[in-house]
Length: 126
Image 1 (cartoon, rainbow, N blue to C red):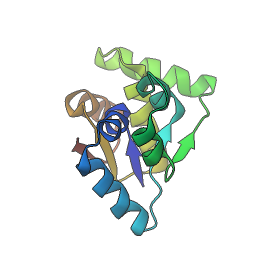
Image 2: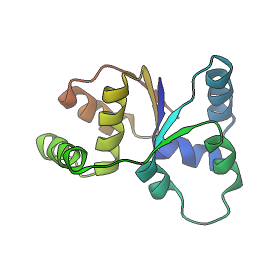
Image 3: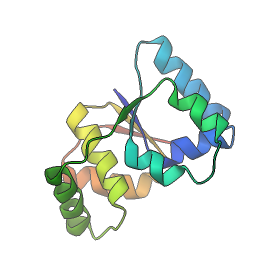
Image 4: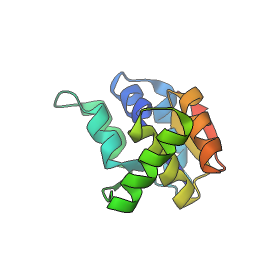
């Protein structure tokens, strides 16, 4: 499994070739990257975002943030002294889905959250 954070979507919108190459390789291998709907909300600032939309066509969008998940994200931020609950949700989603990699523009913050959550995945800076 592969998870994209907000930075991955923003990289797509600015036409970063690396994210599209990674995305194409994932799809060719039968892997459909996962994007949390709140990641999309954080990245989507104006429409239409053609390049981001192009990337999202091959992704699974996870829309559910039930109360237990929201609490877990808040608690993870509290334990780590971080404040980005969307990053915490990305880490928890990656842990839950047993993702092997998270593509991120904020590897430092995600490393802190990943370690505190006891998750095991590789961070791929973009």
